[in-house]
Length: 89
Image (cartoon, rainbow, N blue to C red; front, side, top):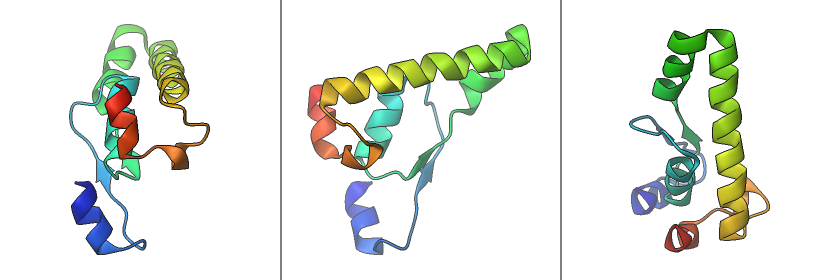
């Protein structure tokens, strides 16, 4: 995905949506060049199980995972996530 995005130039964005369930999934997508990652299924599970509090809990869990993984790969900002991050996962 990253090679194809680099050929498009900086004025294009890439949103991905399919099977993202953990913070590591989001990091991998960003490392490969995605500019946005959709997380619909976990959101729906939280909604179905506990309504709005369930959605909030799912998003909090994913944010904690994402922040933990960012620290593990040495990224302070999202812009610092690149292909090298994948080798740490």
